Image (cartoon, rainbow, N blue to C red; front, side):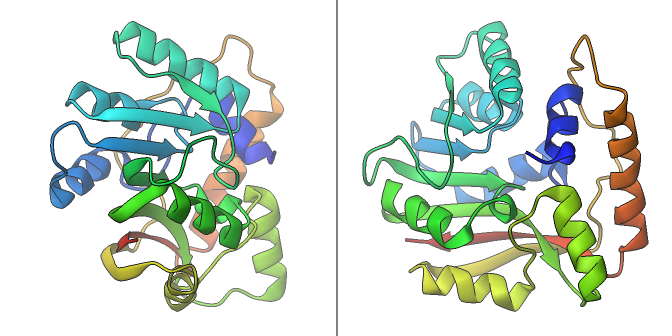
Length: 232
């Protein structure tokens, strides 16, 4: 895993995706799911989104690849007395049967995956007519090859796509009715984010946090994020 992902885990950053939990709430209100719909939070982090969904009555499953994130998510679920258990699993190989969910949420996750494999698995576990909603990094203007390599290597991205490339990948994977719900100018939310700090944080991760902010500031004209919705 990249130092960036390690930093998020040790700092226990909740809502690390642009827009944070407030954008997540707006997104859920927009799609108007039926009560008790079954939702997968793929890449749940510390469990903030999954807990919100559980608290408003949905049936929620949550996965992440980082053991520390899973530990913090499960502590949250226990603290909030929610019947959710985060599992260690990859979005590229989901431990769920076909057509198991009404909605899959991905928040700053897909760029870290082998995207065709991830999209195939998402399509497999969604029931016909169900939705994928994702809040993901997007390249809104070209970077030089050196800049692109630096960004991808730092974050551990497998890919960093333009808006058109996202649409092409989703269409190729069999998704339809692709709607761009938000195409923001900023990668970093202005509001404070919730953190659940680990007791012992490696000193190098403070440098990683600073590098993250430096990269975002340096490439504000090139890096953004999109919130999109599409249907199986």
